[in-house]
Length: 441
Ligand SMILES: Cc1ncc(COP(=O)(O)O)c(C=O)c1O
Image (tube, rainbow, N blue to C red; front, side):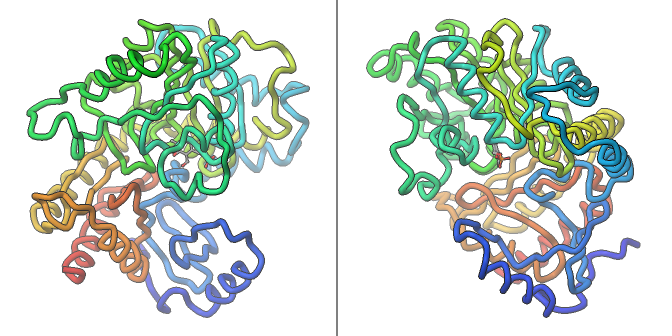
């Protein structure tokens, strides 16, 4: 029997409250803070707080702790690298870890083209690099992104983000020449309502409205797309849609940038979500789960478009040697079994959430691939009116009982446990969600 969840004092306990109070006095006012979880340590899928409460983690620090907490292989790689040197600056000098990670990422990226890799500290920096390289390589300025998209919070990336108006408010003017189009959100699609299959209405609008009336496609440098929308609500496009988007890009010489910051590194049961569709993007972005929690991201671009000159871009910390070691160890583990585990456990979890939907009318839609699963909550299954209050209440109550959850989009519960999750953990999480939903009802 696992020794979690274990609530010994209702959270936040006294030690947690002290940290929260201190944090509230000194940290910048922009942070969200979902609930008062104050972490002391973690092991596998278990997180322990400063008061000794133990939680089952089904959000993985927002889809980051891919190999779970404290995986011995990752910790050993980090310690070994830290013992040797913490920094030298990979933009200016050389070390084996950086060369090895760039080679590894270039080789495992989707498609046959030769790739080159730029290392970053985060997802948003990978997006920034892609904006710059796409403009540089094409000498075009316009960028297309999707409604509901999340590509980061720095000024360029947040211009592509279309998740919450609050993320734009007061920060303008943002990057010019950015155009947002509809994502293939089957459950709420204005073109496909009541249609048995996707009509590609959103892509028709792109070609026959946006490109015909507003924006010459030959001015478009790139289309940024999440192959599965993450922050937007774990939205999975219909099969074939990404290939059709690729075809439109090919028609007009537009670069396809796949933002796999959340969907990549094995979470969907394949290394990249693009692999499910057999699509080769021109640029692929990764971060989050790549370093098991160490800050590292990458922009993997086709060599044919990596035209920028020496000195045109760089980073002091990007590709830090300790982070490279964590990423290489993470990729070993993901390829060595965790990706396969994501398939099996993802099926178990999704089947379980579908059973919950049979029982709880407030679950309107269940979707996902591998261990990237969303359950969208509605007030009414016919009107599909979003029910954000239910998600908030569920997440809060689950926390109080020892299960870490997180919402996404307007009213979706995202389930993104570490890829090391086991069958018992899944059954436990489902039972806990079931119990909390019964209380709320
Ligand atoms: C798809 C996607 N792109 C980019 C980002 C930004 O990553 P970071 O927070 O590391 O800057 C995120 C973060 O949630 C993301 O989900």
